[in-house]
Length: 115
Length: 112
Image (tube, rainbow over all chains, first blue to last red; front, side, top):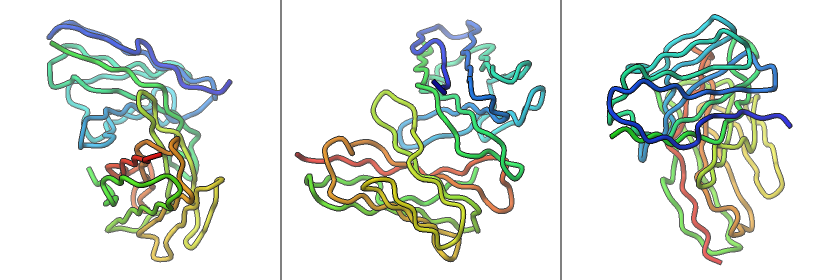
């Protein structure tokens, strides 16, 4: 089954404790992306990757890191989480068409709470 | 970053009614996508549009790519309770197609 998986689905942590949210897709997609979703603000892109070893900042990259060492995986790293990073996070993947992401498939989400 | 203007922000309708929502942009778009998000889940693609004037259906859902390339519409006919969710529009700006631009969503509630 074609899918995007994220782990963990739920995470409660404390300020400053480094964490990683994993994302994996089995569709051989070139493009992967991380979004955060907050009430009233919609989906905001954090980082994206056009292919292996190619990453770029989205609209809200501060406080986050990513890596793309393999095509299927795109982990999101919070080196020193803060309460304002409490949010619902989504990973998405797609093929690349005409130099940009084609129809994106989303993971089930990771709800992060930073106290 | 740029966002699309999506309206209405929310709708509360009776089962069986038709629904219309739309998205507008200040710039020309090459692609329009419509997603639905149900509680506790990620957005799911409903309809993708690639050509100005294109009209595409997916069951009771119909979407159109505006001829000006600056807007798109989604219609749901004969709504049912499982249509409840948040509907998002998204698209590729012709000037920068490396990322999708998103609307803030239309929240739909259906009264059985």
